[in-house]
Image (cartoon, rainbow over all chains, first blue to last red; front, side, top):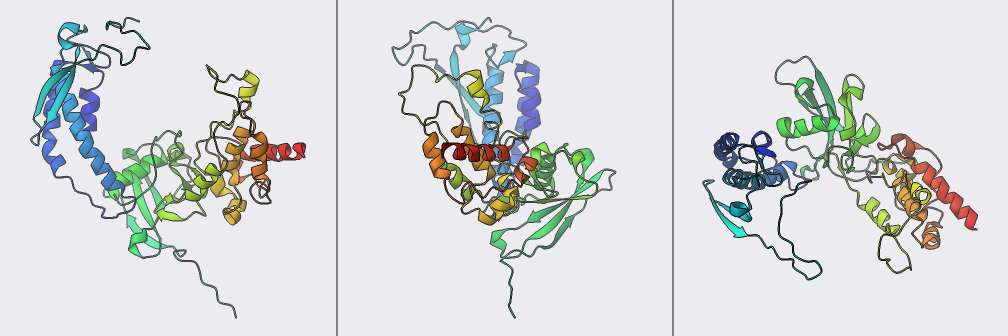
Length: 131
Length: 259
């Protein structure tokens, strides 16, 4: 999982490598479901901690993978080589993802709050970072 | 005739030997201290043979490999793997140091020995109980104390004032120094030890702190400060190259000068 996330979901992304990454991750579902812990100690059980971390990271990895593939623009640390420009018309929104037990992912979106929470600073319209 | 009994769990036996599955050219062996309080048995030294062709360069890499591929029940503290967190402090071939900053190449040929930090209670395997050290750190109140109201911006220091903190702020509280100090071994219930005294000194010389007098009062005690006998093990062992012994002697100087 670490290798797939490093090579397929780093900052610079492309549709074919993202698709390949999603497939590779999906193949990990069965082995990950069968993970066991070989240490039954109740004290300083590093194997148990690693396993719990692995389960949480798997959830994160799968929703990151599907969300990255769906977002057809470049924004911040999501730099698509096939979609160089930031696209505020279609993608000025948060991705919301749900992962089910079969690792199917449902995507939706939520608008971005564009007004400041307090009156201390003025709200300003989002713009591309050019520096 | 007097009878002597050793404290519980002080007899260390021979443990398991985990050999390399296939014959390989570059093998490094580690004898590692193992003790599990749940097992109700004396500690043992397990031997792990590591295939260096499939292992990272540092001792911590070897421990990670053991945990991942050989024996997942081995416990040790680790976090940053690059010498900034101080978690993986342990005794490697008789020297307290950080496993992540010690390259396997730098160790002696043959088998190397890894044990927890000496003279602390062991919680499990290489994990020592640091409760007492943290309590002593809390005792010196390691935060800025002043009567001045908070200014609108940062509290400013001159470059010279700031330079006095060099050699103290780099300390990551790994406690390699305190646990290498024979004086701390004997009196760890009352002597604060080099790491905590280095931090104490960091606040004594901070130009923004106004509690210098109270901080010195707190050290005015036959044990807390004055059990340092300039043995210098602390400075020798510090994996960050700091000099706690100098900080302690400077604290003693401040003590003398105010009398």
